[in-house]
Amino acid sequence: MLNVKILAGLCLLACLAGCAFGQDEGELMARKRFLPGVGPGLRAVKRGPDGNYYVLSAPGSSASVFDSAGKLVKRVPAFDESKAPNPPALPAGITFGEDLDVDAQGTVYVADRGANAIKIWDKSGNQRLVVKINGPVSVAALPDGEFAVATVHEEHLVIVFDKNGRVAREFGDPETISERPEVNRFLNIGMMVTDGAGHLYYSFPYLPEATVRQYDRFGYAGQDIQYTGLEAWPAAQATRKEIERQEKRGDAPVFKRIMTAVGVEPGTGEVWMALGNNLLHFDKEGNRRGTYKIYTKEGARLEANTILIEPDRILIGSDPLGLYEFERPGKKSQQ
Image 1 (tube, rainbow, N blue to C red):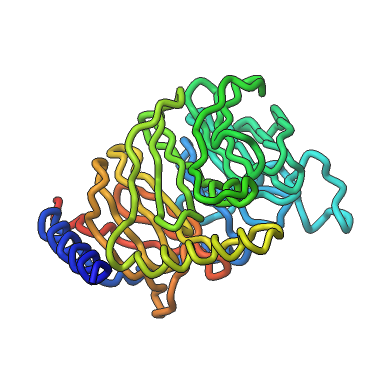
Image 2: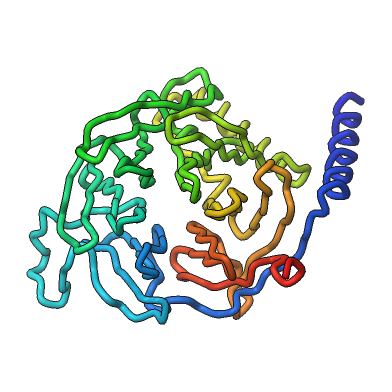
């Protein structure tokens, strides 16, 4: 009886939330494929201050840079794979990149998990710095040449380095879900993005309830944006059962992502989460504004792993399907 009452209450809350905040629901079909040469191994796409698109795929020895028309203009670091020996001997290249970011000066940051390092190149493609760190999975550029790193091993969620590669500060306490420390650390592995005001958004893709936490650049936490709708309950319960099962087994933890991608609109701080081919839109106060199923132009499900929010469109990437352009939901009604 208690479970029935709880379920009924959740239904009522979900209904009231939808009415109060005017949620949009429906399907989004891609307008077109963007950068057709990008596909298997896609890890990240960012737009630089030069208007070019910086794309990281793995495995690969360099990041690719395309202009707005989709033409390949350079690689970072500069490297012609067709003329390289097999295998290429490039200690300065990328071994296995997990994430990429570009700052306002055009500096490129790559979390190279294969090399246990953050590798940094200036806007001309010259390597500026290599910072050794065990198991980096995400990197985000901050103002004044600082950069934030998330790893699979460190005590805190975020380590911030200064422009010279020295540790400036650490912050973020992991969520305690399990009694096993190694399970907790796996569940707290994160993805990071920033907005135009220098805020850092740390997402928890493995937690039962998909969560994005906002920090300022100095580590002071703001609000949590969390997906707790009734439709999220089955996946959350399944994850909790899997956590209990892996706690009892005692072997190395391995979990499936709940949240597969996150994007933030630079000007407003609005958050977009992807849970497989479900795209969720939250305003800056954390209210859910829309829920959409996303598909390629041909109608295939698009399982997102990277999101880039632009003023007039959304770019959503998937490994192995590639990168697709979508019209911004609600854009016409706002004009």
